[in-house]
Length: 109
Image (cartoon, rainbow, N blue to C red; front, side, top):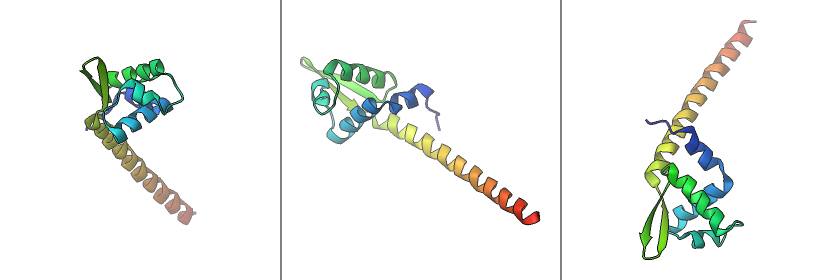
């Protein structure tokens, strides 16, 4: 399993970028103007967020006439989600071992 670059997680951590990604996942292809409509930021700000998401392959775009349509990249999101689930599983296992160790220590005192 490929570990995502820290910048991918940083890109996903921004609330506006996350909202843009959610809109693309829910609605499919959208223009920057369509994405900006429900958001509290301007169209140029949305474009900057889309560029940041595109740099990490979380979003792709294509031209249709004069418009640029953006869409979420589900495979990149799935990779990141799988990695995060793997990390969570590892942490859970470590915490269970720590709990067992703490309980064993408590019983031997």
